[in-house]
Amino acid sequence: MSPVDPINGTARRVPTWAVYILCLLPVPWLLYQGQTGGLGREPIKALEHALGEIALQLLIIGLCITPLRRFLGVNFMKFRRTFGMLAFIYVFLHLLVWLFLDVGIVSQIWTDIVKRPYITVGMVAFALMLPLAATSNNWSVRRLGPTWRTLHRLTYVVAFLGGLHFLLLTRGIQLEPILYMGAILGLLALRRVPKRSRVAA
Image (cartoon, rainbow, N blue to C red):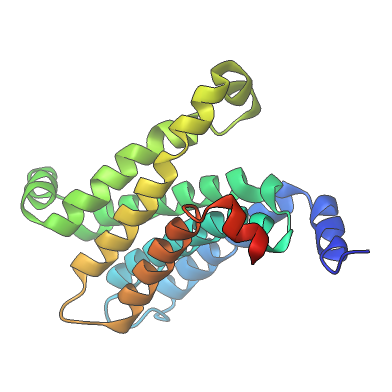
C-alpha cells in the first residue's frame, strides 16, 4: 500500500458539501466579530481584508491540488472545483463589503476602479472569475468538453491578479503579500516542469 493511499481513501469519503460548510464558517465568525468590536478600530476594512485574504488562500489551495497529485500522488481532484467556488464566494463577499460598506457612493466606485491600480486589477480578476463560477458544474463540463479545461485555465490568471492586487494595495514592502505572490508563481511554475523531470524527481 502506498503511503498516500490512506489520505486518498479519506479524501474520497469526504463529501464536498462538508468542505463548503467548513470553509464558510469564518463568514459568520467575522460578522460576529465585526458586530462585537472584535475587528479593531476599522471593522469594515478588517472585514474586507479578511475576506479577500481567505479568497486568495483558497485560490492557492486550488492551485496546490494538481501538483500534489502529480508529484506526491495525493488526489484531492474532487475538491478542485469546490475550492474554486469557495474562492469566488469570498471574492464576491469581499467585493460587496467594499461596494456597500466601504465606499457606498456609486460615482466614487467607478472613480476608484479607474484611478486605483489595485482596484482595477481586483475588478479584472473578479470579472474573469464570473465565467469560471458559471461553468463550475457537471452540466457545463459535459457541454463544453475540452473547451471547459481551456476556459478554466483562466484560474491561473485570476490567481496571479489576486496576488498582484494584494501586492499593489499594501504600502511599502511587506512580507505577507510577497509570500502569497511567491507561492502563486511557484505553483504556476510547477505546471511547466516537463514530465521526465517529474518522473526523475
